[in-house]
Image 1 (spheres, rainbow, N blue to C red):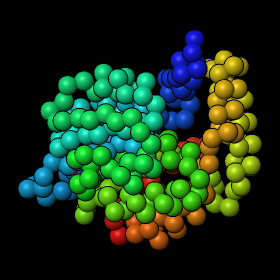
Image 2 (tube, rainbow, N blue to C red; image 1 turned 45 degrees about the horizontal axis):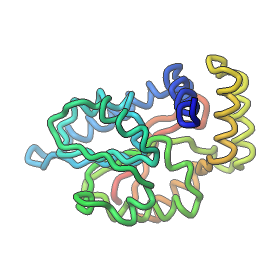
Image 3 (tube, rainbow, N blue to C red; image 1 turned 90 degrees about the horizontal axis):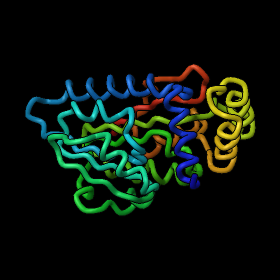
Image 4 (cartoon, rainbow, N blue to C red; image 1 turned 120 degrees about the vertical axis):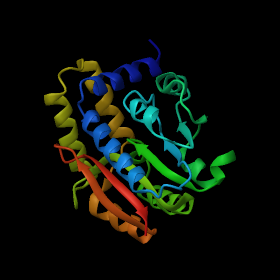
Length: 237
């Protein structure tokens, strides 16, 4: 089994056993988007959506299939997941694009039609890989990409206010070791090693202040039971 297959098998096991509350996230995302759509003027154009780090769309596809979108762009750094996402979404009534790429690069140089303002930005479990400086830059750039009245749904892991990265890692890795028993020991080690090497979750209070300074209004729309996973809804201030 190659490296991608190993890592993807671990990720799928996490999703299938709902170890980071993907089901609750999907429900919260659906409620937020459907409420936003209902509140739009009747004569509003069909919204354009960009998904930064779309993954395989295993959980989001049922929602996307029923949304009256004008277009959807799925972007991911891992090219192997894009055909999986396209297959999961299937045939929909609006045009879709699938882009291999880095979300920072997209934010700085949107490709093609994405140069137009975006009504819905969505990112799930991707932005925590960025440094604090990169997160600040991304929030500033995305603020220039969002259309008036648009929204940005940010699902991710976050640190408690004032919690250091080291303390966060200790408690998250302990959570994996003690309660993610549906995964094999090798899979638990793979996930823990990935977290230690690549994860830089934002401090909840600090990132909210950063977002507000970048011109966003911030609302916590969902909080996970383990004080890590959460969903924020950002709208132009």
